[in-house]
Length: 154
Image (cartoon, rainbow, N blue to C red; front, top):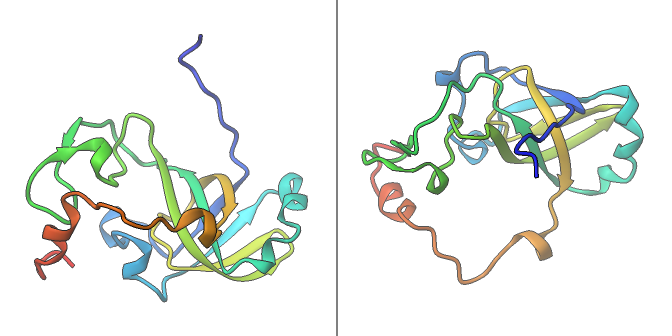
């Protein structure tokens, strides 16, 4: 089995965020943050029926990631955590995931809100957010509750 996986970008995400330090930690912290997903014309046919969804899951490449460390300090805490227990862009495979609000569909363009990615981010895939599939009950959220209680991080 090969350890190489090849993805092809299906589009690009346009946002007002040019610098990493200006980008929201998560889209929920920037409900009015607007952006646009440009789906390349050869994939535009796949957007049929997408307008009926209020939210989308975007999978993308952290194109400005720089290496990784297995223990890293997340934005919302002071202590280092395992890379797979945080949502940090410098990862072994720099793949990002964001849930965004769909505002409008204009041909091959998707107007979105709650963006938390850099301008020019390469898009790998789009999936519809379906509450029945995506909302889980009786969840544990690890170290996050203690960090979120500290107002200096949120």
